[in-house]
Length: 293
View 1 (tube, rainbow, N blue to C red):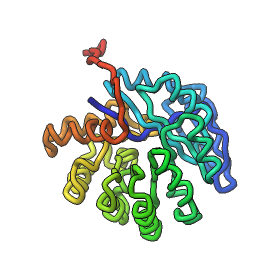
View 2 (cartoon, rainbow, N blue to C red; view 1 turned 30 degrees about the horizontal axis):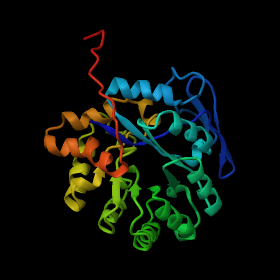
View 3 (cartoon, one colour; view 1 turned 120 degrees about the vertical axis):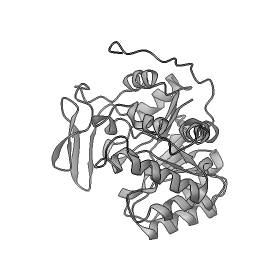
View 4 (tube, rainbow, N blue to C red; view 1 turned 135 degrees about the vertical axis):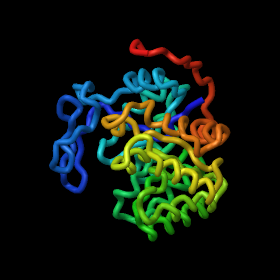
């Protein structure tokens, strides 16, 4: 049983961040802060990062379900993700984007399961969003929060956890594992019983090392020593990470390592996410042999 705790979907990128445009181009490329980059695999020629293409990847890689978060660089995808949630309720746990109380209420009304905040791109205080977090706690929405390498912001996150003890919180990008704030972010899991750490983007953060990411495995072991393996979840950061590796490769370096026990692998790759997000009715996904095997 494998569950992806950090992925992205969009129909098209067409937004601005800090006054700079981000737009889908052709052949999987995007205009990104003034540069042309390979945002998607080149076979996704129309720039659409759809649920259906992701489901095909998930089925092939035997990933039963995925949490879909949002990022400023992709633009607001609430309308699209609401449709995805309705169409594939057993496969996706879709997060909305909201920056005030009215927008958060609209996320609830749209049937989305949580709200994702790219905190590493925020200039305002997290505490300004406390009314939103209180509403999320009341409505049982899950908070996905990616933080920057900023001890002040991490301290604010501690205050949020303290003020909203029943709010489920998933800290993304594995606590920015390659930065000095890694331990401080992971230790947020000690601040409340509903706080988890997910590894979306860990292969991007260790991209210079590349597959099979031995330093990433060591970081997972280190985080488990600090907060326990039951507080850690696997995430892929699909689709951006699969411009460098296949979707299956984003987790099979965990399966193949001898540094983790089989029990820890099962907990990290799926069991924790199943419990935290409450997925049910996961499909049976048998291994399909490659033609080249």
